[in-house]
Each structure stands twice: as structure tokens, then as C-alpha cells.
Image 1 (tube, rainbow, N blue to C red):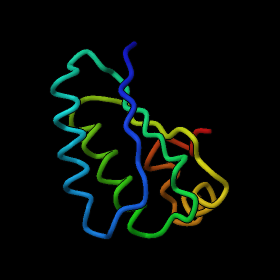
Image 2 (cartoon, one colour; image 1 turned 90 degrees about the horizontal axis):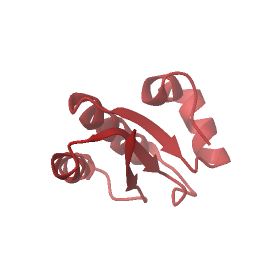
Image 3 (cartoon, helix red, strand yellow; image 1 turned 120 degrees about the vertical axis):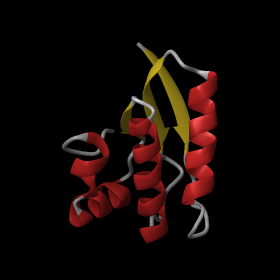
Length: 97
């Protein structure tokens, strides 16, 4: 199963549509990829905008027929995902390590 790795770092609020467009273009170039692994290890101080970006990326991946998983989830992001209920939405039950 081919995996596309997409790295995410903190970006200004409102960057979600641009990120989703980049991911969609990447998936068009890699039609055989079944999984999008989003590397979030650079999100050391995650905020609400980062959650919005992750949600948009997850939606773009699923719209493209791909699974979406997180890699490199730090303690702060893991806690934020759990507290907001996004852990279940983003990867089916918990933030991957």
C-alpha cells in the first residue's frame, strides 16, 4: 500500500484551503497512494488554526478516497486533539504516534 507523506507546520489562520489544494495536487500526481500520512512533528505549540488545517487535510484526503493518519504527534497536540474530540474524527479513534 503506497503512502503519501505530507508535512504540516504551524501556518497562519486561513491557510487551510491552500494546504488542501496542495494535498489534492499531490494526490493527483500519486494516484496509487492509498494513505496520506500527515507528519505533524513540527507542531510543537499547536493552536486552533492547526486543528482547522488538519481537519481540512483529512477531508481532502478522504474526498480523494485515501485514509488519513497522523505521524509524530506530540503531547500537546495529542491533548488538544482529545480535548476537542478531533482525535476520533481525524484518524478513527486516536492520534497515531
